[in-house]
Amino acid sequence: MTDHPTNGLDDVVHQRVRLGILAIAHQARQVEFGFLRTTLQLTAGNLGQHLNVLEKAELIQIEKGYEGKRPRTWVTLTATGEAALRDEIAHLKELIQQVEHAETAPIADR
Amino acid sequence: MTHESVPQADGPHELLAAVRDLTRQVRVAQRGTWFPLLVFAVITLIAIPVYRYAPYVDLFDTCRSSPQHTVCMAPNPTELGYWTVALVLSYAAIAGFYVRQSRRRGVGTPIRPYVVVGVALAVLMTAVSIWLRLHPLVPVPADPFSTDPAAIEVGPAAWLVNGLASPIAVIALALLVLAWVERNWALLAYSLVYLAIVMVQGGQVIHSTSPWFFLPYLLVPAALLLLGSAAFALFRPTTEVPGR
Image 1 (cartoon, rainbow over the protein chains, first blue to last red):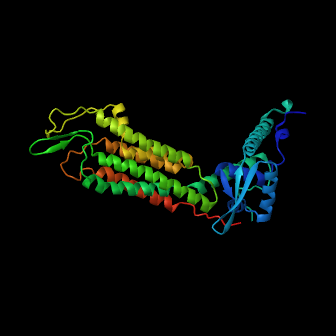
Image 2: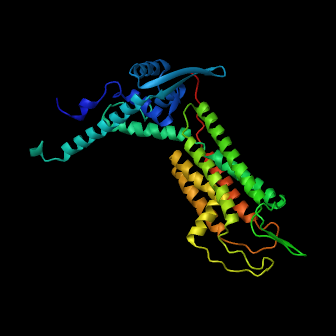
Image 3: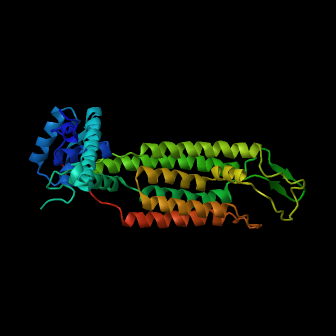
């Protein structure tokens, strides 16, 4: 097995919507379902499915409650989620570097 | 229709660009810059009647009396008391505002460092001001009743200590922390300009016998804060979270 950066990619995190959810939760500390839905432009059902995947992987924590009469669902990044996001971004940067290096290297070196 | 921050390809470039764009959107939604500026403008304006009409409390024994006059060689301690209370209450109000905004918009707020630094600077300002009353950096004139203006050389250390004792400068220093918390370049530029103006203004001594001599020291920062508040309010995000 090689140590190519693609081997380090986590299938749960390496998906554009789920990566988006983790990035938003990281910056916001705590983010509401409605904000995620609006920002990521998803339907409630679709977003709910992605949240379930992330919650099962223990990357996020979901809290449900009410504010007045309005139901609210708050999403918080867990320590595991924080580490997974950091790793994913590091792997993506590594991948880009490798691709750029391969593009600029002479053909004989490839 | 799809959003530009949610790319349709899962390439590393597109994913990283999306992460950066989403982070920027969250930062914009977390901002509430206009409110702290408005609060500080209001407490600066309220300080005007305090400076003018609050009776002098000679806590530090700085007043000397002659048959005709009483001369006090330090600012009224009531002013210091006013600023300490007003600043702490302001930071409490600002924290409350950001928490309410966070609930309304659906994104958490990282305001705690700003509030903690703001309150710490207010406490430091009070401590430095009291220390300056007890250990004046500028020599006390031999004849406190003399009306002759005297040129005083003030070094950079004294300038810095005086700055820390100035509530107007302390507000600006805390705004630099808010600019960092909000990753707000516009606020950083505004805070630096505001700080430069109030520090230059604080170094000028107006020789005046008017009871309103302090007015420029309060009106200029209050006007700057009000203008800043209006400008940031014009460009503030109005996103509210639709319920689930």
